[in-house]
Structures are given as structure tokens and as C-alpha cells.
Image 1: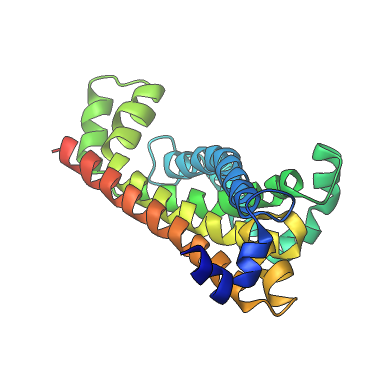
Image 2: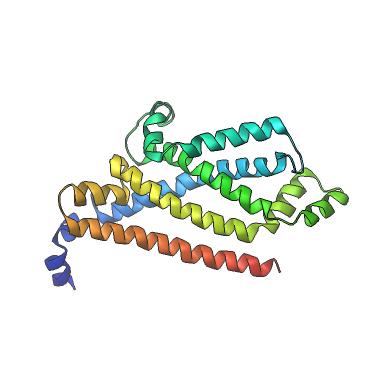
Length: 233
């Protein structure tokens, strides 16, 4: 097996596992950027998504002012192509993490890049909740937290798992794009050490690893969504 890889994937072997350009380093950077960015962007997206559903004209707590602000913010960031967003918020990134280069610096644009997408996904997921259940909860004096956690988030948990899966897959794509401009990770390996140096074997393996991450997230997300859907019945 070692001889096979050395013969057909010489540049992949030369890359090594550790070090600045090692495969484990690249995988770790991709996971670091993806998970932390999704944590920050996901929380922000969840808050905006819930806010949009609650304050919309037909919502439980209609508020035109708050709804319009949330809607405009989400639409604004969603309209900016990610590659432009990286440059657009560079001063903010510099202010927050004191650098514009590297995996930590990428967390800022990645979080802002994923949050509007996730907010819209959450909005759609929560809109699917049966209004009869919401009205029943209100009739028995449910509080704000009851409406949000015991009704909306609980009833839509299977759909939320599905949209979270979609968002995580999108997040992996964004980390690859960020890596392509020097943020590290598998995207950086594919472009800097593969494509730019005409090392097609490196590009191939880096792409395969990204696809492997996507498949893993998709399978895990589908199983979780099915499990939550079964429990809700």
C-alpha cells in the first residue's frame, strides 16, 4: 500500500501528516474553522430566525419595526458574495482578532457568511409548525419562553436538524473558499500545494477529503433528523 501511494501519489506522501502543510494540520484547520464558525454564526442565525418568525405580521408577537430590521440585516449579508465579504469586513476582523490572515481570522467572515443562510433556514423550519399547536399553547397561558422552546423549537426539531445539516455542508464549502485565499485548511492545500504547483494528486486527495466530510455530515444529519422525527410522533 505504501509503495502504491508513493508511486501514484508522490506529492501527497511528500506533504506528510504534520507540519505547516501536513494533512492532519489541514484537516484540523478545516474542522476548527467549520465548527467554531458554525457555533457563532449558528447562534446568531438561530436568534434572527426565531425573531423573524415571532415578529412577522402573522407571528405570535408581531412587531413591524423589529421584523423589518432583522429581515434587512439578514438580506444584506446574504446578498454579499462570500469572497467579497472577506474583504469587506477585513477592518472588523482586524479589530476583533488583531489579524486578517489565518484560521482564527477566518472565523469572523465565516460566521457572518453562514448566519444569514441559517437564519432563513430556521425561519422556514419554524414556519412549518402547526398554528393550531401555537394557538393551543397561547390559550393555556404559555409564556414567551414556552412558545419559543416548548412549541416552536420542539415541534420543528426534526426540520431544524435537516436545515442544520444543509448549513453545515454549506459551511464546509465556505471554509474551503476561505482556505483558498490563505486561511488554511483543505481548501488552502488544494489550491496552494495542489493546483498552483500542478500537483494534481494533492488537489485530488484534498477534494476527496472535503467530500468525505460532506458525506459524513449528511449521513449523521439524516439519521438525527429521522430519530427526532420518530420521537415527535
